[in-house]
Image 1 (cartoon, one colour):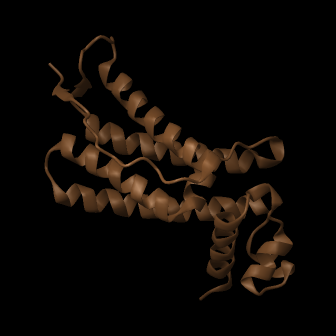
Image 2 (cartoon, one colour; image 1 turned 180 degrees about the vertical axis):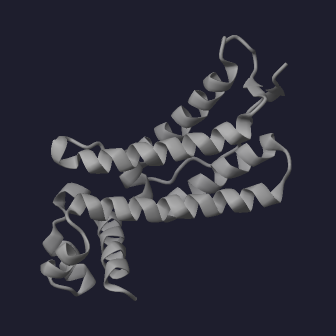
Length: 183
């Protein structure tokens, strides 16, 4: 395994066993069996390392989407299956939940915030693709597709935040999203 990959894996393991603010580059180096200098040879900061881990999760989510896309041709089925798979992935990868829910506190973390914003946009694009032509019932909004998108993303991120706060299992999912074709 390359040093960069081993360092990212060490960060992932540490996030899953403790809280991020208490994780130092020394802890990461110790977990990866490298010197702290090795971390800085591969990453400029802890936040660049977090961004690399977030990008790893982004690639995994894209892979999940590809698998879900092959499983059905109906968008309504794809949405439900994708949400279920995202929650399964989140339960297996607490670092993913933590990184997505991490709130940058100051300008020193602005590069990570940009990466997080890009990640959130990529999630929105996945759902926008699935939601083309569908709306929530009843159709009360002037922009029903946006209302549906916001409802789904709010639900997902709300569940992630609850999970992050108490690390209990995510709710068992019986998704009964009622979708109707947009007229």
